Structures are given as structure tokens and as C-alpha cells.
Image 1: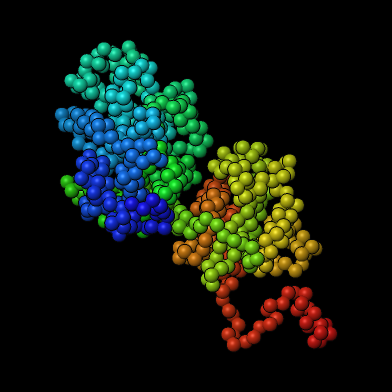
Image 2: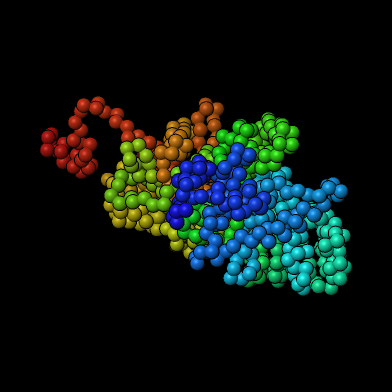
Amino acid sequence: MSEKIDLTQVSNIKEYVLKHENELNFQQLAEKYHDPGTKYALDVFFSDKYITGRDTQLAVFRHLADLKRQNKDDFPYIYSQNYVQAIEYFTRILPNPEKINEKIVPFPYESFILDSLIGWRDVRTKGSRFHLAHVSVGRHQFKTFIAAVLVNFGYFVIGMNGSAQDFLVASIDTDHAHKLFDYIALQASQVIKLPEFQQICKENEVEVQATQIVGHKNKNLIRQGTAKGSGFDSKHDLIAVFDEAGGLDPRYDEKINQIITGQGDIPNRLLLKISTAYPDPKVSFKHEEDSFRSLIEHDYERAGDDDFFINFAQDSEDEAFEPETWEKSNPLLSDKKLHDKKLIGLIELRDNMERAGKLAGFANKTLNMWSRQFQDSYLSLYDIQKNEIDSFDIAGRDVYVGIDASMSNDNTSFGLIFPYDNGKFHIEQFSFIPFAQAKTIEAKEKQDSLPYRQLEKEGFCSITSSPSGTIDFDQVWTWLYDYLSSNSLTLKAIVVDPAYLKWFAARVENYRPEWPYIPIRQTSFQLNEPTKNLQKAFIDSNVSILHDPLLIDGLNNAVLRTDQGGMVKIDRNNRTSEHIDTADAVINAFMEAQNHFNDFNDSGNDKPLDKLTSDQRKNYFKALFGV
């Protein structure tokens, strides 16, 4: 197998594997590994049993690639069949909480998750390899079952012979936490009666109570918690589960950090974050999802080896109308006995929610997509992020500048557009962050769910230098002048809303009259064309952007508003925390940039005057006519 694999630009991982199987040699693993998890991974690539999305294929690729890395000096992990057999056996002796007389047989995708989390071991610590697990799947796909099995396995198998072992069942609110605990408790109440555990549970006086499971002798405890609760950092949880992590308000991210800190260096520690997608992509669960995906794509860098990631999700918003692809986010559809009934139910749900104007909820929860496309959003997150690049050299280029101004709460943003490659546009932004209304920059960060101080260090913004927290006009003006001159940029146009930038217009007139200053009223009639054309450019991949959270956030927050004449402009739903300043500024710049590659003159005409500056043209006319 090649030592350097980069999957960043590979859209279909399965096709890649099949094409490179002679180098990868994944199929030979079937001779040695017969466990359900590895069998699922091989079937994803080498059979037609499953319809899987790209993220799922990335996860199984990593598993197979790592199986071949075993016993190498720079890879201190092994996949133990003994541990796999233990979790598989435990799972299969559990009664079905809904039908007590039936034993549970995990679905193949569930086995893949369970076998990976328990089977992969760290040879240095003799503990588990994965300490943080990120699992995302559509609703009603038994994610609660996976979480319950892990907690009960941890309590009755991993931790039973220890003492004072803590286990946490947490979620965004009491209802979700209690629902998961009830499932765990139903399983536990049956486990203590099984022959394999009856005696040791009796010795430790294990009791399943309404809100906790406690061993009165060994002091082992499974407890509940919520994001708004306390005490996370005072426990040392062997196994912790945070359900519906995608809905965790960024204000409570510290709770997750407390769990991780409390776990310390326990060899078999595990924090499982499990969720569906939610409407707000600014949450940590979504950021981690993007980060984990990138780590696996850059396979050769071997980063994040102690983190597990799998995401059962659709690959594009278009698939909301392609039921034949829904197995990607609803893996239970792979079961032939369940397929027809479940698919009919999902189609009916989609149709009902579409009629009720709630298709976005179906996309989020059922298809597991972080999408606002069905809320009249301006751009889907997919169409934004697919245009990200690592870097772009702006030096010496033409630039179109748009400005969106504010004073005390909204940010003041520059949209910066650089035409290139005869038809494409590179887009950047720079913003100035006020905090007068929020009182402090810390409060402003919590309000907007954006780490402005970190983004300032990364060069995407500047926090206002005004002690009052309002926008500092001198700071804004100086930045633009220095930016243009230090990068040797040719300013083609600077487009502004004159209603909010009278001070800027005065400075241009007095200090930089040569700047091509273009005022534009912020009406749908004026903005309709650049708004639609920029949208099309993103969809058609005729733009590029950096991984700039401010720009991505602004574009993702934007929704389309249509006036009575059918003209559109962007707006936002939440006027306090959902900022679209960067998107407004870029659309202003695109008002002029969209015509950069258009030649409105006769193609045969020589246009020497077009190449002259304003002062040069004045001297030209003066020489000709004495004016």
C-alpha cells in the first residue's frame, strides 16, 4: 500500500479503492479478519450490499488502511479480535428493551462502530485506542442503542472489577438525557439477571434506580447530566456519552472540556458524542466533523489517531428528492426486511414536511445534513465549502472592494474580489468587530458564536480599537489604504452604501479622489443581479475562498427575500446573532466585479485610453484640446 494517500480531492472513495486495489490490497484482509465490523468495511467497498456516503466510506477506508499498518514502529495500535469478540458477545446477550424476550442482533454498521471503539487497542497503555468518538446518523437509526451498549459494557465489563468508577449519560437537556438513561436502565435491569453477571452484581449490590445505576459496594455509578448542569469536572468518567451534541449551544462547550479534563489519562476512557445534524452549523460538533474529515482525508499525515469519526449523511441537498440514496443517512434501509416499510414512511414524512414548509427539518434530522437550503437560504453550506482552497496570492492583482458598514453591534466588513483565470473570482473579506452593544468582546463572541480574538490572530478581522467599543473610522480607513498599497493592488471599484458611509465618501473625495468610488442603494432592484450572479458562481464552482469562518458564516446565514416585483436581496432571520455583513460586502463588490470579463466594446477596436489612469487621461485631453 502506498505510504502517502491524500483523499482530499477524491469525491467517490469507493471508486478510488476499486481503482487502486492492486496497491491497497484491502481484500486480502478478509482472510485474517472475520469480525462483523471488518466484514462491513470490506462489503462497503467490494460488494453492492450498501449505499454509503463519502464520510462513511472515509471511516471504513481508515479502518482497513490501519489494519495493514499494524506492527509498524510508527503505529502503536492493534485490532484485537479478543476485544471484538467481547463486545460482540455482550451485545448479543442483551435483551431488546422493546421486546424483552428477544435478544439483540446488531446491524452491520452498528457492529462496525462498536468493534472499532472496543477492538482497537493502544499497545503502549494496554487501553483503548479511541478516547473521543464522533458518531452522526439520521434519526431513528438506533444511535441510542449504540450509546446504551457502550455504557453498559463499560459498567458491567470494563469497570465492574474496579471501584468508584464513574459513568456519565448527558445531553443538551433533561428530556434527552433521561430518555437515553431509561434505555440504558432497561438493558441494565436485564443484565444483572444474566448468569454471566448475576453473581458479581449481587456481590457489589448493583441497583438500577430511577435516575442512576449504583453499585453500593464498589461505588460504581452511572449518572445523568445536562449541558446546564454542574459537576462534570469533579468526576473521572470511564465512559461518557453526550447525546444530541449537534444541538449543544456554544455557550456550553466548556461542559465537554470538563468531561475530557476529568477523564484524564484513564487507559480505557471514552467520550462518545453522538447526534444528528442541526440547523446551526456554527456548533462545535459541526466544526469537529469538518476537522475529523480532513484528518482522514490526509491519511499520510497520521493525525488524530486516537479519535474515531463516522458520519452517515447524504452527500448533497439534491438527494432530498432522491429516496434511492437515503440509505446513506439511514443505514437501517440496508436491511431487506425493513427497507420497503421504512422507505415508504420516510417519503411520506418528506412530503408532509415539504407541504408544511418544514423541509429543512427533514434535511437536518432525517437526512443528517447541515443545510439551510430549504429555508430560502442563499447558499447551501455544501456550495460554500466546496470552493475552499488553502491559499491564494493576491499580490499585484486587480481588486474590487465592497463595504458593509455598522457602528455598535453589526460588524463593518470589506468584501474583496480578485478576478483570475479568465472567468473565476477569488473572494476574501476583512471585518472590524465592535462590541459597544454587547459591552465586552467576550460577550460579543458568545452572542455571535464566533471566536473573534482567535480570528484576529489568523488575520481575518480586527477588533475595534475604540475604547467605547464602536467602530473606529480611522482604523478602517488606514487598514484599506495599507492593504491596497502593501499588496500592490489595482483598485477597479469600491462599492458602498452611501446612506451609512458618508464619512467614507468624504474621505475618498478629500484624500483619494482617484479611487473609483461607486455608491449603490441597498434595494432589491439594485442588488438583484449581483446577488443572483454570485449565487450562480458559487454553485458552478467559479469562485474560490479561504477557510474563513467569518465569510462562511455570513454566506451561510444569508436568506433570500423576494419583493413584489420578483427582485431579490439577502437578509437574515436573527438580527442579533446571525450576521451577514461579509456576504453583503461581497455582493456589493460583485456589483462591479461580475462584469470584469465582459467586453462591452467592439472587439476590433483598439482602446488605449482604457489603460490610462484618470490623471493621464486628463493630460491626454489637455494636450489635444487645451482643456
